Image (cartoon, rainbow, N blue to C red; front, side):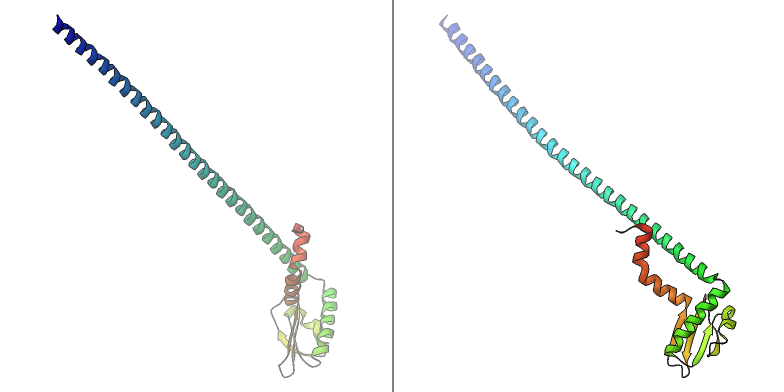
Length: 186
């Protein structure tokens, strides 16, 4: 029976070693699993953070783009209103009563006489008879909504007092105040 005891001791020892190895392997597997889960959580957290950052940037871009679109639309609307206002001025000048137009033309002739005492006067065809007593030789018609163009005798000096050019000068110099009136100060 001594041999049976030795075999039994060897078997017991082998079983104990087997249990130890299995326990160590299970512990290592658990540690590997725990480490992998922690690493997976870090990867997921990092990816979530990147995704949130990308979403935030995308939202910011969309918001900026929307603000820019609104600003463009507002500016285009303001531009349209200014164009309509300008056209309204042109219509008003085009439809001035004859007496008012005659009075304005006389004032423009008087102003021109200061710089060009003698020369030729031009106006649109409808206003030609309103400048016949201007003291200038009638030079012909010019395309304009009203007003006069006066040229010196030698042609070296030319004054453009057409309503068109006066309106453009006034419009250009008054753009900011007109915008402020129409749209408020910015």
